[in-house]
Image (cartoon, rainbow, N blue to C red):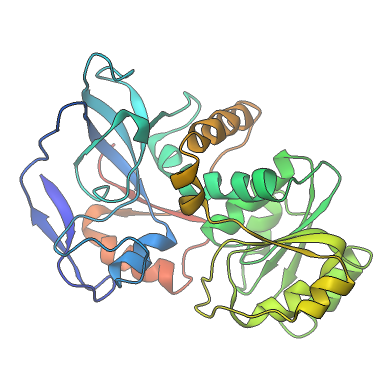
Length: 322
């Protein structure tokens, strides 16, 4: 089968398209013919050896996949022909993948394989951050940083589905129409004065800040949280890990909340199933994972480089077969 193999931790350039042996399932494992794969920032980090999971090279990366069950044990809860998402740690960027049944989730009938692949970690992370960690309520105002990225787009859609008002903050030009189309009530460019603009649009502060960016924007972003607000740290896509002056947290009664989905599910393995069930309900009510760019498998290095450089609006997908 064809697969993209990471042969060196040199970033996307360390990937090679190879013919590799098909995976042999261990007892209890399911074999899935992959149709589409999602692109997410951990894929970029893993290609550079900078993720908490660091398999020895060479290996097939790919965290999110969607496809059709090829073979499955009788007691797995799956049968050949099932349309499934696969939440794997590795192996997704290939024509076939093996996984344990707990890593498989049914794709709602309303979604294509591309949309199923796009529904993975970003939407789980957004729902986990907004509902499980921040306990966002209908009528609250949510500020989403990095709004044009995969987690940002998912956060906008989930926040709107929860009944929140959304202020999208974006550093890329040309994204406003897309963000408003997703449901963002306000779009603010990350430039001089952006903090004051957010404060003005939120009558002095937002209830929830979703931050997958980190870096230099953190200090000003913290000031956009209202008294009693919640600041949710998802990641550090900008590269820098910020520090906080605790007097700003203390005197304004702001909560800083970590939302590390991967670490949390390692201690609460039942969470992904519950989040998936909630996301399926939201999809039934009309939510759709938007696709910003589609690439063939042979162009995976280009796709990951585009993701790393911010050239993909929304979610990027690798389409392996129709």
